[in-house]
Length: 209
Image 1: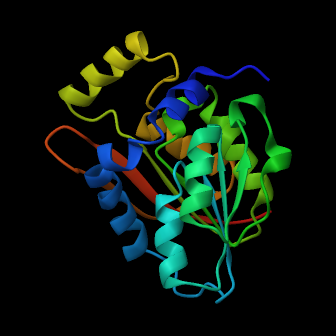
Image 2 (image 1 turned 180 degrees about the horizontal axis):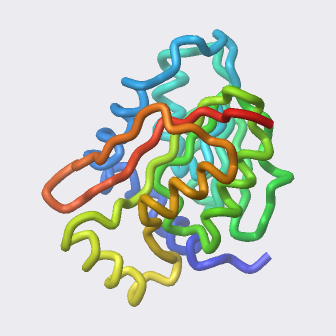
């Protein structure tokens, strides 16, 4: 299968990704862990969509050795790094722009951290997650927030310079997508890793099947 632009870009970034985005990622991971549901079973199945190098799953493995951890990503080089980082995890190559919903396993909690801007159809991506969620399944989603002049300029620049980038999803549009696919917002925040980045992050709950 021919590589997509996102696959090629992240294959080339795999070795340097964690160092390059450490501060950015730590802010996101910290928020997720702060809002982590305390009612998950000891052996809960956690699925990370767009797991990249497996950095967050590695953290979970260190603190929750009985969790079953699965990561999906489009970039094979990222997955190879993740397999080395989390030897007990399961890692699957999947491109959700190609509607590969059959590769998405059932889980007790889903993570989708900073991949939405690569989705041609964010609504279809959320629909794929929703189809696999039982009622009350927790989901964390984080994506670029089109908030502030710098982020808007960045979005314009990426749309010209990065063919793996599609767009930032506006809050009103994303809330509509969540309602249509039976997700309730439990918590939300705008994260500011530095003067430039603005990230919209959600803790969600599936409300019905």
